[in-house]
Each structure stands twice: as C-alpha cells, then as structure tokens.
Image 1 (cartoon, helix red, strand yellow):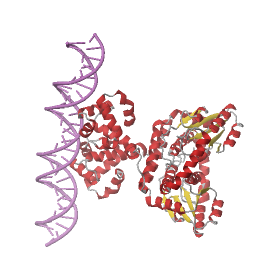
Image 2: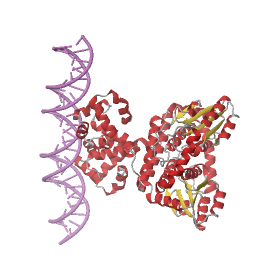
Image 3: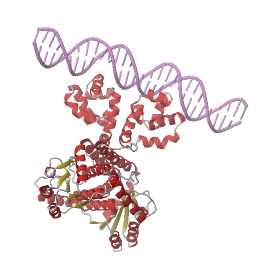
Length: 288
Length: 288
DNA sequence: ACAGCGATGTAAATTATTTTCTTATAGATT
DNA sequence: AATCTATAAGAAAATAATTTACATCGCTGT
C-alpha cells in the first residue's frame, strides 16, 4: 500500500487540467480534503463530482471513500508531523515536535530504504569472520557501538572504533575474511572514506550506512543510503539518529534471522547471565 | 483532536451492549473497520446501521464518515504497525517489521509520556552545575552517552559513565550542585539504584529515565517513566531504544530552548569547528 | 403489574457517490 | 481550413450509503 501523497506528487504531471486542480487542493489543504464530501471537494476545485471520482481511480483507488481513507492515513504523518517549523515553547509542544520529527524521519526512511542494500550488507556480515564498525563524532560513534551492541548478541565477532587513527591502523591489518562497516550521517568524513579504501585495498569487504552518493558511500563496495532532509534550526537535534538506528536494526534483524539457529544460543547465554546476575525475573529483555 | 482509539478505550465501559460490540470490532479489526461501509460494519457487529451512527456520535464524531477519517488517522500507526506477530522472512518484511516496531514504540511513548516529568528533569539540568549520566549494559550505556552527546552541545557540563564501580565512586563525591541521571530500560539495575541513593545522600539531585515504579525510578527524586510492552521473541531487538532516544531528545530540546541564548554560542562554535575542519560546505548538521 | 426510560431496530427520507450518456475541446489528418 | 478523433468533463439518472423519524422491546423501580 503506497503512500497516496507520494503517488499524488509523482503522478501530478500526468493528470488532466481539472484533475490537477483537485490534486492541488488536496495537497495544499489536506485537512479540508480529508473531511470534505466529494461534492464539497468538487466545488472547491471547481469541477464536477464525477471528475473527482475519476481522479481517485487514476490514483489507484476504487472509490472516493477509499481515497479519503488513504489520504487520512498518509495525512496522519503529514498533518500531525510534517508541519512547517512551528514556534515551540510549551513542554507539550516540545514533546509533539520531537515525536513528530522522529516519526516523520522513520517514515521517510521507510519509504526510501533500499531492501537490496540491506540484504547485501547482512549477507556480507554473515560471510565475514570479523566485523569492524567505524564511526566518529558524537552521533556516528554511537552508531558504531550500536552495531557492535547488536551484532555481538548474535554471535558475530565484532568490534567498534570511533578513533580515526585507530580506524586507519586497523584497516591496514585486515584481510579477506574481514568486513568494515562505516557509519556517517553526513558522509563527508574523509578519514573514514580513507580507512574504507585502505581496508578494501587489503581485500576486506567494505560497507557503509551513510548519505547516498557521499564520499563515504563511494568509498565502500556496499552502501545503504540514508538520505534525510535536515532542518536548519541549529537548536534542533538531528533526527537522523532514529533513521540510523532503524537501519542498523534492519540489518541486525536480518542477520539474526539468517543465522537463527546459531544466534539463539549466544542470546540465551547472555540472557541467562543477566537474569541470574540481576534477579530471578525471567521476563526481562536481553540487556539493559 | 484526540486520538479516537484512546477515546474508544476510555469510553468502552460506558457504552451499551451493542455499542461495545461495535467497539470491539473496531478495535480488533481496525483494518476492516477503516475500509468498511456503515452497513458492513453494522453487519459484522450484528447491529443495525443507526446503532453505528449513534456509536460514532457518542465518541464525539458528527457522522460515520468523520469517525472513519479519525479512525484512519489514529489507526494509521495501528493498521500499519501494530499488527500481530507475523512470520518474517523476506527482506521487505524485515524492514516493515523493524519500522513498525519503531513507529509504534514512539507512538506509545507519545501517548503516555508525562510532560511534567520531562519539564522537571530539564529544569533540574538547567540548575545543576554538573550532570552525570549513568547507564550500564549495551543499550543503557548507549543512552548515557547520548545524554552526554546531546547536552555538551548546549554548554551543559556533563559526563557519562557506564561502569558500576565508577558510578558508585563518583556518586560518593557529589554535592548539592550536582545532578545524576540514571538510564535503564528495565529499571532493575540495583547498582544504579544504589548509586542514585548514595548521590542523593550527599545532596545531589537525582533523576532517572526508566520503567515506571521500578527500583531505579524509586531511587531517584525525579523520574520520567518509559513503559513499553516488549515482545517475547528473543531474536527481536528491543525497540525501547527509540523511545529512550526520544525521551532524551525531549529533555535536551527543552533544555536547549530554556537556555536558548547561552546554548547557541557553543553550538555555533562546534559547527564552525567541524565545518572548517572537514570541508567548505556549511550545510552540514552539527556533528556526524 | 406497569410507567418510564434507554436501547435498538425498521422503514422512510435524505444525502452522497457512481454510472451512463452527452457535449465540448484540443490536437491530428487530410 | 475543414473535419475527424480521442480525451476530458459535465448533466442527469441510477444506485448506494447514511441519517432521521418513529416504533418496539426490555429492563428498572415503584
């Protein structure tokens, strides 16, 4: 089930004049469109109701009401979260804004993520004898540790490094059984790109999770593109971290499934260890 | 505009027998309810169409179609993400599942987060001369570093510790100007609770972001409850981390706003540093 | 037992939506 | 330039959905 707003944007130019008028009304006044009857919407766009029906069909809906439901679903993210910059002051507004950014970031990732890249990286992790996760800077180093945190539970030999020099030195010791994963939000980390190239030079597999077409992406064989628009407000925390977390999640989950049998044992051991150590309650999820 | 699903849950017991049947159908089969006509829905619930209309009115909607729109909006997360456990195998299913878990986790947090707690913790951070973020274990130590990563940019003096002994020792050196924030998904980290109590004993302010009513929550003066249902599948990564990230986000964002003037300068400096150091492009977001 | 009230269904009325058919219009062809 | 064709779009009719008005049922309290 595709996002109707996205479909609308993509198809707009292929629509007839009247239909474009409807499209524009829908796009600019989602709130109105979602609540209007076909007659009201037709009147607003200055067309007849049948034209609206045809418009809905062209967008892949069987009926106007199906269109409205789809619009309401898409517009949920839209109306609730993709609002333009609003002046934020009350605590509730802060909460709504933060949640909105997080949700819409995830939504954008979901729409754009390339399944094949996820799969290729997961497959390579399964093949490698050792995985090195590289990331620098407040956020990306976090991601490197997240990769380590997620993979070690699955019995993958993995380590994380957040230090440029260390990354470069490590890269030069690698061989064919090794794999490097570079993590960078901006993709402009030259040192990381260099480390990836060095590792590749020695035969190691290289992958990255970063901005598409960036130098880090170009420096690695496999790359999962995470392209997100970032706002300009300097106070705004980068919501990209949700997307990166999700990207790592996907890869780790896939790795877990692919090596299900061999992964369950390490997980069980970690869990037993934690439970015994901390308390008798066995309901706890792996790791705090 | 309140969430219709939440309203439904709250009001359910005040509804008549027939209306409860409708409520149950709606709740259990959102997907169906969103697409059904009033006649179909009435038939499924074994009631007459007017009863459905009355049901909608009671929930604060003027018409069935308004109800459906509201349901579609609320149920967007629901229909798309809160689906029961599905057998996951293809890469696309993995992606959908991961995104679904992330989205619904954030949704649950958004519905339940206590604004007052967020505010109290932010205020306390603003008052403190130094902040110590404590977290242990793969996930929670990540959160502690995230707190550090977020707050230092705002000019807050902050450090993170993931080591129990270190936490305990640190706690015993604190005083009235200090603040400790404990982060724990399960809330069952006894050492952390102990460290918080020790810090409080020496006059430091204590806060936690953890499961409500847990020992860690009880050991701290201020606590932001993050209560999330966790699945039972051991292979499943804990989606709680999205919620924790968001919780930290909220607090940091609020801190940023409250000390706007003094926060912008450190951010600008960090940014200039990064930009100069890495390349000429100034569009980059703070920190990789 | 029965008055009164809320809950529910039936059928009619209303309203919304879609289908069918017709007309208009832009571009293509001679 | 005349005419043809295909597409677009509206009018009116048909259908379907929804709501209203009203009748009935069944429970509760006297």
